[in-house]
Length: 234
Image (cartoon, rainbow, N blue to C red; front, side, top):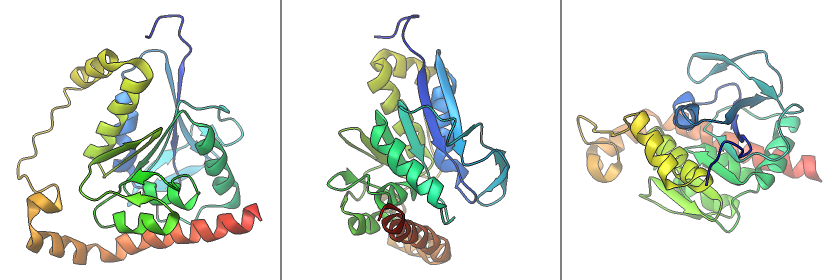
């Protein structure tokens, strides 16, 4: 139960060049209306970063400045090859965080960092099968999957839902309900095609073909991350 004397929540949002902003914006939005809460956009420096495809931003907290024990650490998809420093930070803080959130291709990066072995997890429908390569148990058709303290989700709306679920676990259901109302988060998509099941096979195949090169960049980034981490930790 939250009281005014409760310690501040420490919310970490991992960013990097070419990170996909819609994957993390829901987490930020949910916790932005939560009292007594610090939100950290984390990267190795505070230089200008261009998120994917063209979203300029700066980190607010470097790896060395970041609190040791985060209440939430969230990561979204990225096509960037992470540095050794970034890999070690993700593996270390991810293992210590009270709740670890992966959105879309961010779930693959958590897997590549060794943080989803033996956990049920999901990702974008185009990427979910790749999770098994990292020892996770893929869950298809699940917008959000919660397994112990790991929360993984599909992109965009999944980010909002994962944030509200994490808030409910940290501050209680009433706090999450209040945030949901404060944001007036009651999505009603106008075309009802936001999943393969709703869109049907023809439209789904069209989207997969149109963005296959981008999806493959997310897969390659995760595979390279896993290979690099094995070298760094050796």
